Image (tube, one colour):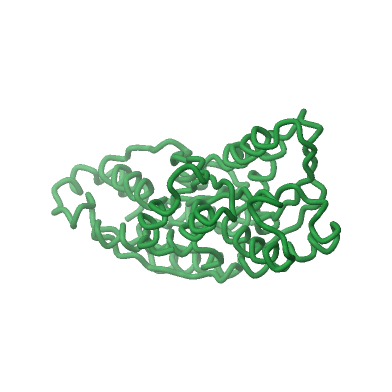
Length: 320
């Protein structure tokens, strides 16, 4: 099914039988970045669950954190003649050629949780959080928490060049602007992984008098924060007390850290991006309804005061 046939054949399609809870039985290609974090694994699980519930034939491709693998996957989906493509892009740039190929094949593309630096006409819609806002919420929490106290901050960035890394950094810096008592003294990528987060935090601690010169850690995702928490403990310091920890995603394990007093705050990024994406595709194929170019999901700040043990129990079965 193509853009053209979706619009021209809306009346005919309306007579077709429904498949599960989806308006139409679709074949959809899904190019996932990989499984670099618990949040990413949950997004994959929920996308597959949403597809099954809606009768969507989902063709899944794991890119293992490599853009060239995603581009190959998209070209494979195009060659197979899928009805639509979902992609969580590993980086923001370098997509123009393959997105143009999808458009020429009249296959709508939906971006999940990350944006691309391409013409908006090359994709149908994007589903995600306001990544800049997420970073600002984290920064606002830290500003309020430390008040007038002098605070040196170390930052664990996400994958270099990815929209979450760029936007979460920008939002955090916006929150700190004008608060001269807060200063980011070190910032380095941890690639969104626990292993790299721990490794980079170890280097931060060694460089800053064993961590004595660090007031707070800001991590672009919870997995890096969990790795960093381990490094802080191994350095003989108390995470959550000696070094404040604020991060983003709200995966189950960060709630265990919050309950243990080893993390202080997290900003939620829902892993269910596929639900709104499939809703948009259903409406588009049914009668040509054009969705908004950006469908924003809800985010929320959680702290130790929000019954983290209860939230952990609620989240642990979601595929993280």
